[in-house]
Length: 171
Image (cartoon, rainbow, N blue to C red; front, side, top):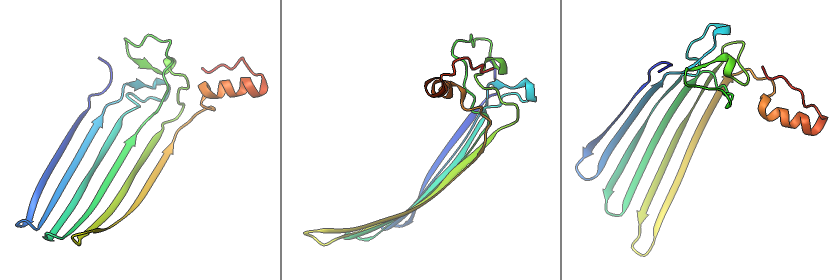
């Protein structure tokens, strides 16, 4: 009823490169999820939107019955806006606005992240034993800007327990 629309798509294809000895599998995905939290105090509608995209490629080589090589790459990216916490005591049937948030933002937030994962697996069958080698590499990046005044819900308990502070206004 409130908020922006969202959509997603997935696709996959397997391509034989050589009859019974090599194949390539490609997979891709994309999703765009519309937000539903409005922040009129800073002029942003649907501030908690999310975009996720990526893909995977796997190359399988089986030149004979005793040897297999599998190489893969997985790329994943995500971008999302506000990550606000909603006051659970609020009636949300008419949508969510900044006055229903525990810690409403006073400036736009952004959060980006993703990873690149590469793996290789080599297997050799020697009849009475199999020798395998598996290796991989991952690079993960996270970048964000988010405003929080001590993450007020959990921080309130910390302040009460350590300093005896009990009258924190979170709005």
